[in-house]
Image (cartoon, rainbow, N blue to C red):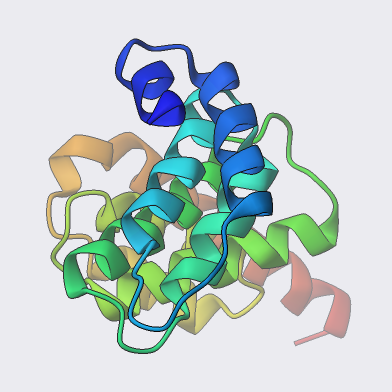
Length: 169
């Protein structure tokens, strides 16, 4: 109750600490579904700008079998959103983790709000130009991110041209 109270009043860092204490001390009993609280824990991390922790909790939650479809969708999207909110480009491993989260989100919920942003992320991070152009061509509302789509297409063409020159094609 204290974690939910802190969350509802925008005290996200405090909510994170209270959720951690709650989950550390809870006795799991058969039939007890804590998935909504785990989602709120992940969301509190995200809102407290603790993106790695939020992504980790949301990713684990989304992978559970028998999860309520609404929570699965929200957790999948939150995992992607948390990873994409991290400052800086991150290491190659971080970029791969982000690309994988974006792919899971687009694959599971292709028409969800935010899926176009995930498609753009995949196109920008993949080394496979064919896959990148496929993702860009499947952006549902290109007017929202048109400049980014066009810029990414230009970058891909330039990268392919440069690679062809190096290979002597």
